[in-house]
Image 1 (cartoon, rainbow, N blue to C red):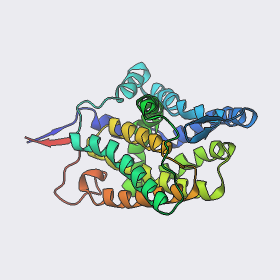
Image 2: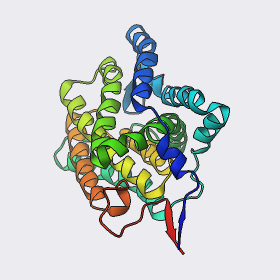
Image 3: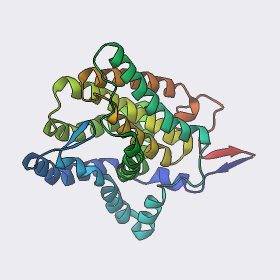
Image 4: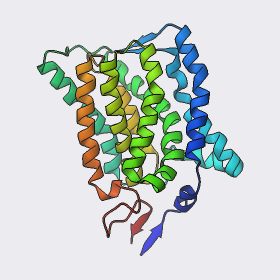
Length: 276
């Protein structure tokens, strides 16, 4: 017996991703200007410009478009997706937390062996839970837009890989100006860009596997936390992290549960179905 997830058909029929991306871009302009005229702030290993606060924009952009389509109920439904109901299998949420941590650890190990990374954390370990909590909040603001609103309609047209590459490239380009304002060089940004696109492919895979947004939020948050490893601002760390993330993304694409409906191997069911 197969039981469909109640809101899956509604979710698949809604969303205007092009309008969403345009709206996010337009709303970002004042933040870029603010970042150009304000000093950066160092938090741990990261230099953050004022423009980094644009992480708040994807959720209001998605909410505006959801309201136009379905009124207050659509906005409430969008915001409610911050917690998966029903939840997916626990292993996907564990993967969302552990995979970025493993990539960060491997990147640091490689840099340390190459003599390019130190061993002193830029942030005291006792502060890391607060860092993670803040990262979850910022990730939720972004992922309710990128994953909760835009991913499904893009996947219907371009498939899992296409959606990951397209949305990942936009996501990365969206961050480039703040990264330049923070003083990062071309080599560091190049590695970061590649890793960010690959991370979006993984996030979309986890979204497909769970049918929700929570795993995307957790992975996004942990990806930000790994920026607090020693000497993360070194181009070697950026590039090695990107390579490991690409390998993980390729592995995710071999899992049928992580691929969009219509791109899975025959006989595999998506997160919207359960066998009873």
